[in-house]
Length: 147
Image (cartoon, rainbow, N blue to C red; front, side, top):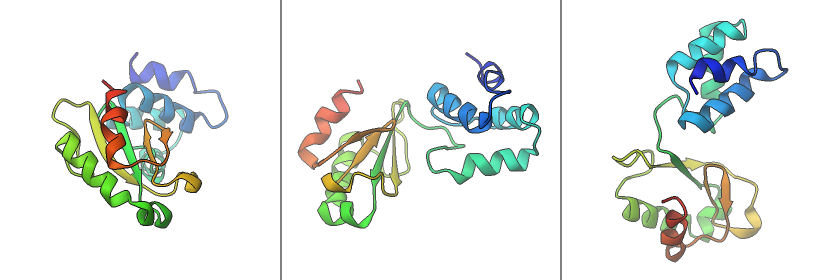
């Protein structure tokens, strides 16, 4: 489905801009510039306003990302519980650094703020799905679910 079709489905809905961005994210893993320009037209706002929404929320990205976006919580509880070891294991396993994507376009690593699962830290999410009590030994199994 192309970006114009996706955006058009939400044109008459309250909160349609955000909903269309979520749908675009699901389809493309990021918000292409031409989709943001189209959204501005459809939702009758300036391109700057549409871009502002796209860049305000951390779950949206305007740069190309992998099919699987892995976000690692960097809040204090996760940090204390060993998030740095999880980051090191992810970077080693995928061969990339935080903020980068794999050459094959499958994975992107990002930091995020608290995801509200502090009872079971460290926490990561893969395309929004939370994984709790993560440690370095669990990384290969989590990544295997994505292959």
